[in-house]
Amino acid sequence: MQTIEWADFERIELRAGTIVEVLDFPEARKPAWRLKVDFGPELGIRQSSAQITALYSKEQLLGKQVLGVVNFPVKQIGPVRSECLITGFYRDDGAVVLAVPDQAVPNGAKLG
Image (tube, rainbow, N blue to C red; front, side):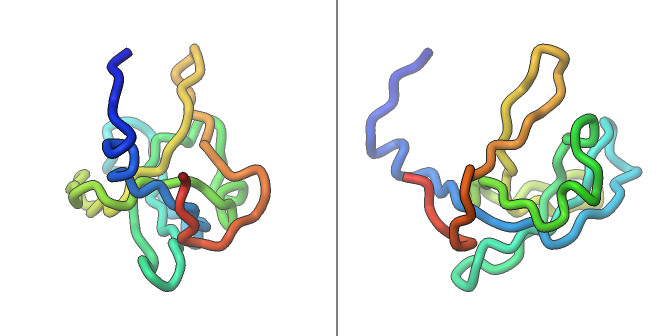
């Protein structure tokens, strides 16, 4: 494990957002959903893709609050322009469990 300085952590913008749209992503190399996430009035709605189809249906994701990194550069993933990284934990079987607030917080709230 590499040690970082507090200032390094402060540079990461981890924000709470609510998933407002979930679409199929048939062009993805591995099964994934296309997501639109509302990060509040300051950041607005950002899109991403997430390889979370093993544990989450579209219906389970819609309206779910998640944590996302919002200050990475935009990344083109096939036809999707990924504007944030939705965070989660890898299980031993490779499935991803989303990192979520355990209580509702305002969209755009910063993890700190």
